[in-house]
Image (cartoon, rainbow, N blue to C red):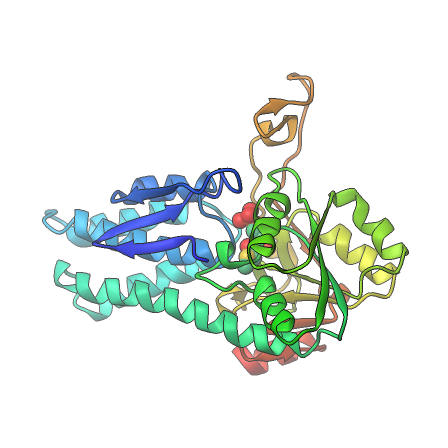
Length: 339
Ligand code: MRU
């Protein structure tokens, strides 16, 4: 399963706002439209946003091929793409890599072929990292595991295979997974719409719960471990992920359940010391007052809609990466592997 394709100098995105009811692919040749697609969450998930931005950078280079000031136009395109969503560091990481590639290839339109190769490399490397971390992660999954996850960190959220669902897929292929509990993940229901969709398609046992059921599920002894994704990890292991992650972490600690995040190194931001430095996106209140377009609250009510929260590293059992599973002390061990 994939959600991002580059064919004939056109970017195709599987519209994740419509899943699972419709499987619509949208074609993009304008980088501004891609930036809007990222903001509108046609594509979402930290690594997927990075891969998409890299291809969008190629679209910009093709559009500005004959611009009087190619370098200035590309800088502006980079700014537009960087403004699409603030939290997942993969976006900025991928854009930096593309800008470096442009520079290394003379900074002129002659670099376009190299840019396309670089975007494809970012895409392929992401899939490879997910397979590697999937295998490392499978080693921490016990037999007959019942795994709880939150949001969607699957194929749809990455270049392919998935981070959390990469671990699940690898562990399932080893016969270790009895059940995956998917939190529905309000307000935009990535768990219900996307994680359940991926798992059902792959015939991996999945039970959908609403977010507020997770604590009681744990209290009943039905969760052996929690694995969820990450949008940006600071140098000390604090990490931002989909809103609700922090509550799951607190619940897991109370119930003595191992709690892991799975991420590729492109999600680690060693320039930020701790979680307080991670920018948290706030999204429109309509996502809270409405459910799937249907109004469920008075129009005049005030809302607060942070898209992510920050979980302190003290609540983490381990960090599953493509280079292995990192255990405390996280600051030292992250620096050793990724510094
Ligand atoms: O708002 P979203 O859907 O982009 O949030 C996605 C998440 O929080 C994922 O857990 C994270 O990006 C990791 S995806 C491999």
